[in-house]
Image (tube, rainbow, N blue to C red; front, side):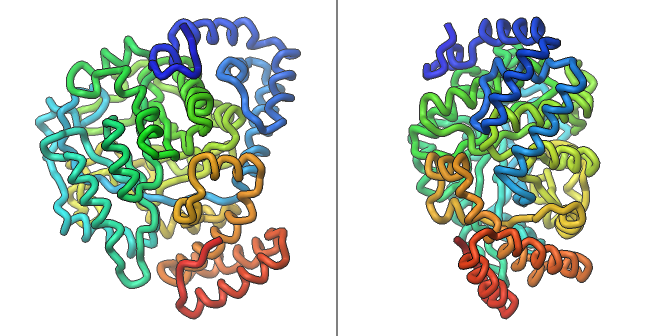
Length: 471
């Protein structure tokens, strides 16, 4: 039985409810009156149910599809403006005891060299990331209680936060590690993590169990209920995601939104972020072996419909995607992207390891500076801001500010100040010139004159060498 507030995975992600949702969407994919009514509701910026959003995703009326895209762009602009948050993944270890069929880290892969960073190697990686200009990291590690125990993750977080190199500092560490216990989530919270991210991979239980034949991750319910345990452990910023291509995309879309609805209903706080990776090539992995791949056009519609359905959530796209795809998705809903990323263990300091220990092939191989410059040329504001997390604006506090629109009073000033830091410390001459012009233009969009005056003063101080101002 479907129960959005249930703590049981098979009740809040209910197979029969998803099947009924898909049937309903199929029956109404050309129902102009219903689609209009759903779009009118979406314009209120309070979100849609998984069933309503599934009708939009299935819609076959081209004029209505164009309305969906236009609304997604408008909602993205209203909640996030032109700001794009920058981050980088940091792979600590590719030791893993799971048997995931789509991941090269799977235990049976004998081709990939296994590597675990020492704390000194982590230090070198972090300094390399700081020298690029990064302030926000997402930690990644395979599931291996022997090689990657929680104590190792906690020690790594402490190491990362301790490193101050020139003007560099990592100000927010998000963590993407395997499902664990409430007690361990409390320890991660105490270590000062930002968002706890865990991808479901697929919400289809039968497919999930086939794709995860061995290892702790094979337990569908334990994995699916992990965000609940994280919330119970005090982590109120959690991130969802599915790996599109493993199962039929409309099934995954409905499951993803049901998960978001569940968190909102059970804890009063929906997902802080939603990630939308697609299956792509990697060592020992052929994406053609998964027959549910999606086209760029469908991918774009998925992103637009998520943005319309969950207007408040941050949306993340990785370097799996090409620059052209990323550019299109930025317009439709994406608010966070990685730049200068390496998906290998030790990849920021040892180039030769890049192809050997990477989790997936990177399509966007540009440097962080090139990505920052590209974003600004397209009218976006690259933001290195971590203020909300550091000011305690997390969970329901962040969501209430976001949903009310009040977050704009902090976000644009913080984005401009952190961009100024980047320009002063790391940018190429071309990027610095474009960025300086963009900051001057965007200053006029700060609505409050008093805030604008404070930002002007702080930008001047940053130019003279002071750092880390925030609202």
